[in-house]
Amino acid sequence: MQSYVYILSNKKHGTLYTGVTSNLIQRVYQHKYTHGSNFTTQHAVHKLVYYELFGEICDAIQKEKQIKHWNRQWKINLIEKDNPDWVDLYFSII
Image (cartoon, rainbow, N blue to C red; front, top):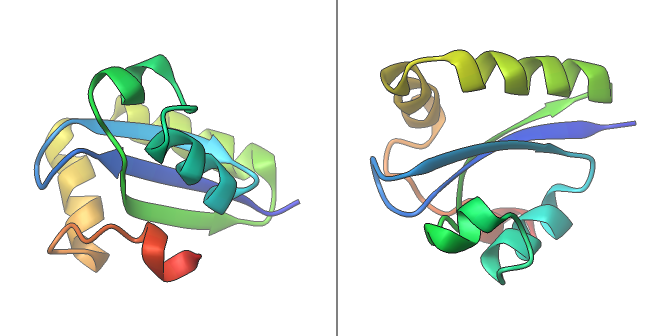
């Protein structure tokens, strides 16, 4: 089953949240409209700034764990490699 690792932010260089899902559109929608996690609701982290597709959920989970252990600058570099302006990618995938 296809799965995604994604990173949300509240603004450029703001608070970051990393997650994994098999339905990216639905999950980001949940975060945007406060049905996601307590963390994203509390910190208004709603912008999809990075995502990566995987063929298997186990690979996506492994990548999520890896990213969560990275320092902040590595995460910023990952985002800015393909999204230097921190555009909300949600509207390009719906």
